[in-house]
Length: 490
Image (cartoon, rainbow, N blue to C red; front, top):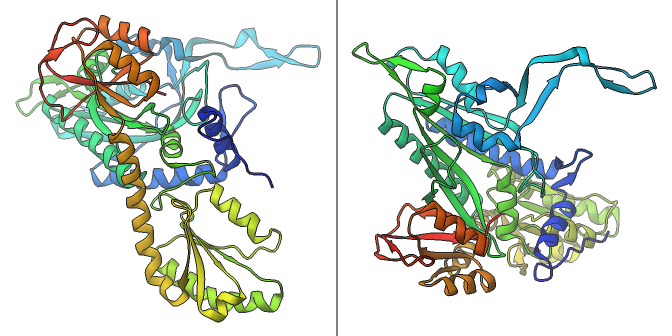
């Protein structure tokens, strides 16, 4: 089976598309702009979901589920929100089909909805309409709820995982008695996302705040984590929003404080999506296929026997079974592939394409010598190791691979943050090197928009740990108090 993919250096976009398809992560669907997530891709997403869900519950959140359909009138209650999402909404106008008399079907004109329904692009409106009935007193706060769901945002240009009309995500929606508590929640969840990205995905991120032009529609502040892909483009990997009292006022959500006075609650929302799959692919993978960090890999170790007879296979089975059981007891996700419908070389290429971190190959000669061939996916190094050392060696090696992948991505990211002091320098870096450009900006939306028009780069964030530094805006020459990070982005 041919598994070649387009080299990254030749066409990065095609490399990405080839990899997603040939690694069995996702496929195009009959619905324009929508994708089919295949079992292997979904297994990786399930690992993300499981780990993140545990982190949410550790921080006091519980899961719920809210409707897919939202009455159109709900969107008109928060002006910035409706303006931000109006062009992306799918609208349900009818509820029944009928025979058209020519062997086909048509929409029944008598089945028009009294009020159109919006297919969920995000759930703030339907959730805050519900919270009005749930929140009456300060004793009901904080309300810390998350939901795992799908959303629809109509997209004209799509790319598997990175930008699709329908995608999967989680969205947290919390209510608080004070602004301070809500801001603390917003930052806390940003840190949860950052830790997950770095410790699980092995993707280094920069934590920051979005500018007014880039913040979530209806938020007072949007916090984000920004990652850098191997082609020098940035990718927003997660966002956490301080919503203030905007939605509470729009939906009249009030609580009686400890003095019996009525106040509007304070809100947050936060989310990550299947876009993380795109970040994972583009941060680590190579021209041979996926490279998965061990913490996330559905299969961490695959063992492939090499044999010519049933007698040889029986001997290998007997030797490998205790090792497989020991690794499983240690919590390692191991697969023993003794299928006879594919040759070892085919299996090697398949597991390399799927990014399995470690591969063991064992044949009759290895059995006699008490060794096995151990191949690392991240470095593609092969070594002969003592079979009786594998039970201790493999867990340590998986930890090392996880660390090395993060460090490699971190070194790449750090080497692609360039300080510039003029617009000419900025264009030179963005056109030739890519990555993050650290530059002064005069703080106006007009300048931000002009730079975007001239360079196709946006302000990815104002880093939370930014040093205050007087300077001059790269475009206008006006005074600036700090640098911000620009980049071309997905």
